[in-house]
Length: 177
Image 1 (cartoon, one colour):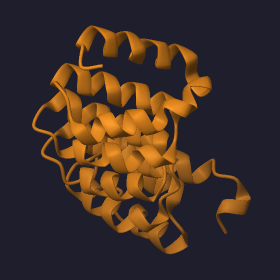
Image 2 (cartoon, rainbow, N blue to C red):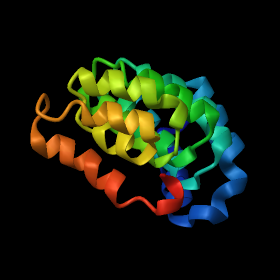
Image 3 (tube, rainbow, N blue to C red):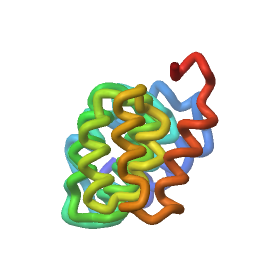
């Protein structure tokens, strides 16, 4: 349907149905590739994120650079749920966004997605005052990169450093030597 009210009703049904709505993923991805009004785009992105399907990451990824902040931010948040290589790639680009919310969401999502390949980007973001990167660095670092992080003690506000240290200290022993 091209009717915004019908689309909105459908999106509300998708959000309510959760995993049972998985068969609609290709339709949502198609809607994202076509584009829509700003308000509807945000709703489509949010509904798609609820389904947590990695195939949606490629359709959502371009919206991290959208001209409207609400769309950019919804896209970054959604990629944390859809996961996959496309999500990680877009979130790594999101670390360089002019939008501080997108940078923060991207930094946090990369850690929760276990994107160890993003550590160099996270360090760059951290050094450019993206404090949320500290948590992800703490979740992902190995002995060498944890040591690099520790060298920043005294140069960064203590509360930001401790958010990364907490992640390091409370990781399972199997994740860190």
